[in-house]
Image (cartoon, rainbow, N blue to C red; front, side, top):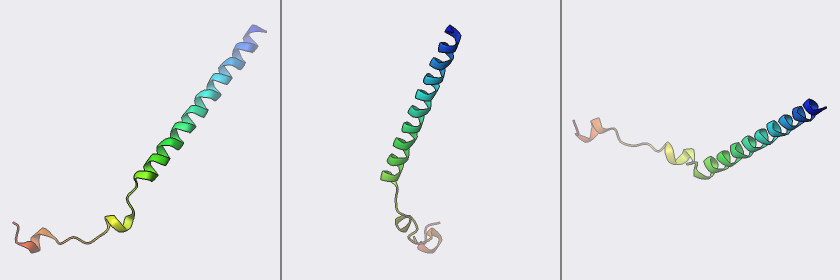
Length: 55
């Protein structure tokens, strides 16, 4: 019966690890979303250096 309890304990530890990893993933995704730069701001046309006389 001891091995059965030990098996359950490992299962609980694995479940706790999985829950912790999921929470960490959600925190990272939330942080990435907060720091995200909208596409409209990153796709502005910039003049090409070749046309500004910089060679």
